[in-house]
Each structure stands twice: as structure tokens, then as C-alpha cells.
Length: 117
Image (cartoon, rainbow, N blue to C red; front, side, top):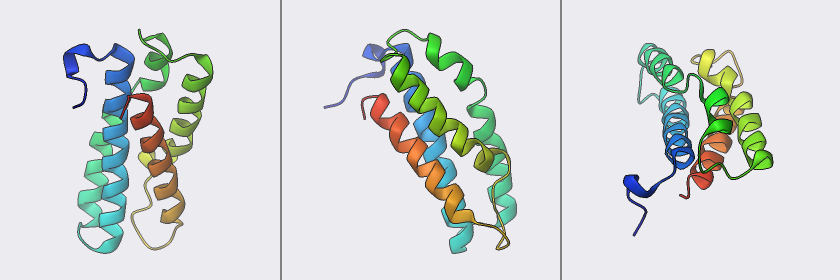
């Protein structure tokens, strides 16, 4: 049985929220290219998800329960690698959307692990 939200540290809660947003972004990108979502729907979804991550790079290092500077720096490096996909997602066939998908998946997985998932 997993931790209840009341027992998670602020860091773990923020990391879990970031993991969820990054995972949703990866799924949105994948579904848009698989034809399960329109590119227009994907664009709107990315705008919402990007807003949900606003400030995570500044907040994460200061939150109680942080695992230490090295792990936080690693998370932020992965986050910054995924940031271009969040701000300018490849929602047509003219770009390397798999590269963005890989960056989103890697960041999501790392944040999930950091949250205790």
C-alpha cells in the first residue's frame, strides 16, 4: 500500500505532481501522433500542462524532504531537457517528436521515482 498524501513530504508531493504532468504531456504527444487526439487538442493540453509545472525549477530545491542537491540537480536537468517539448511541442509531422517523447518520458520517470513511486 502506498503513502497517503498526508504523509508525503512537500518535495514528494511536488515531484509526484510534476511526474503526473510530464507523463500526461508524453501521453498527449503520443496520442496526437497516433491519431487518437487532434493536434489542436494536443496544443491546448500542453498549454495547461506547462502552466502546472510553472516554478517547479525554483521551488523543488527549497522544499522540505528534498533528497539532496545532486538528485535535485539531476531532476532539474531532466526537466530542462523536457521543457522545449512543453513550450513548443512537435504536433505535426515536420519535426522529431520522438526526441521530445523520450525527454518527457525520462523526466516523468525520474520525478516519479523521486516521489517514491
